[in-house]
Amino acid sequence: MRFNLIGPFEIIADDGRVCVPSAPKVCQTLALLLSRHNEVVTPDCLIQELWGESPPRSAVTAVQTYVYSARRIFVKERLAPTGRTLLSTKPPGYLMELEDGEVDTRIFENLLARGHAEFRAGNPECAVQQLRRALALWRGPALCNVPVGNVLAGHTAHLEELRIHALELSIEAEHHLGRQRETIPELRVLVHQYPFNECFHGHLISALNHAGRRAEALQAYRQVHRILDRELGLEPSPGLQRLQYQVLNP
Image (tube, rainbow, N blue to C red; front, side):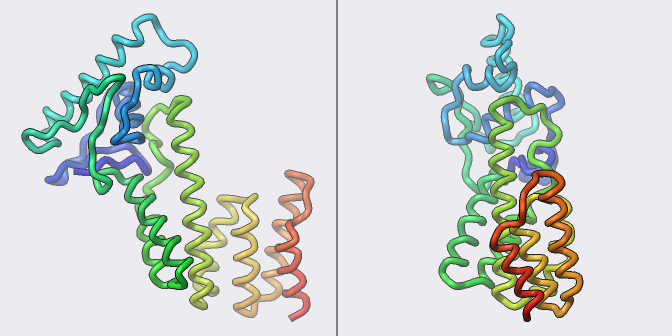
């Protein structure tokens, strides 16, 4: 059994069946409980997520109904082994009890941590393997098929920041292995997806220069210069300016 939050929310049964609750509020309730699995989530937290600052008078009862519906899904779809309780009431709220390997976000975080540790230990090849496994879990924006309120918005933003960090670190590890040329296609995509991320622009300039494509490297520098100046009124960082100098003065 696995719960996938990175991309469309889905529950994968042990036999491979895919289950997605049809009721949006039940999906949202489950997503919040899963984002904090093995932690007690209070009704107030769920109410804040589901209705923000304007909850209905029946909010507490509605939350109880959504939790009950989630439990019914686990039973109806036979998602949990006999005798195992996935979602329990534990004062002052509700608790989803799961192993780390049953939630894709935790798998991603653990792989990222291993990749970071391998890179710091001077093992870029192992780092790349762990980081690429982590990034392969992304099937799209986190919880892209679920309504997201104030609480989950923070969680999805945090996951996106971790994804960017994993991308930056994997590119850096690839470059440590001398694979600058191989990363150019990926970096072309990344600088368009994240136009204000100077790290991706810098890696692209460096990779193009290393591949002997100086004109393209200068063009890539001019592109980020235009973006920063036009959109933010900023000059490129000193690091990017040093890269430009290195291209001009090999």
